[in-house]
Image 1 (tube, rainbow, N blue to C red):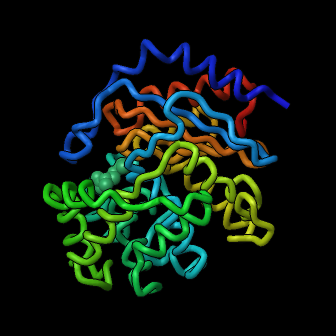
Image 2: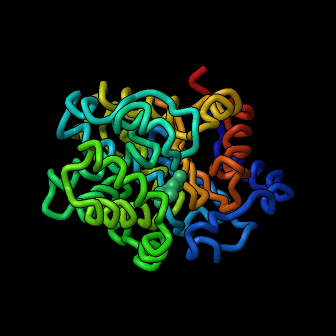
Length: 305
Ligand code: GLN
């Protein structure tokens, strides 16, 4: 068994000079207030041991990492029918791009770009009386932390400036891609993006993806092993937007990033890991977070490749 704690501590020491690189997501005013320099990492191994370094217990805005869990709920309920409404191909363009939507007549390329995630949110609005609460409850259960909740100030802040997402939602609606009212879909989307969790919470919540669909501390499957495979595949091919190729090359793990600076990455059968550092690269992935994950797979010699 690797000494994961020692490796995380080494990464924490070596990453220090990189923590002031990148920029926080200032298009969401509440997130613009987060200072650069924070860093935390948590890794859960197959025995359920949690290894941490830095601010691993500090809650942050999970943003697009929430899309792993909204996708999981939609896939659990709809199965393959979900793919009639959203594709499974990398987009090769920014997470909030409008480009492909017109070419492809309102069917988003994948469930992790904003357009695809809005469709998934629309699906959840059909499935649950309170879709956002269903996501929060799922994350509480999977992480084992009953205090997981929404930072309503972040949700309101994004809603007040969410012109691009509003365009995407209206565009989708014009093609018949959304069943519900545009405002309702957007507000549910902003709220699930504004869920706050720590690196420890997210690493624990990702455990079912490394454990054939069975969550941490549970014995029953949450999803089938095959669906866990599908979600991991989508994280690998679509989880870090237009730098998925670079991320796969450097890190070698399925990963899902968010503009709050978090990245959840999974090594099936070995570990689930989450890193947080708010400085983002040009694509919107955590700069130091990506580097830390690259060092983790290099130092441990463990990656899916
Ligand atoms: N809420 C953010 C947005 O829609 C999520 C984007 C992200 O984390 N990549 O712009």
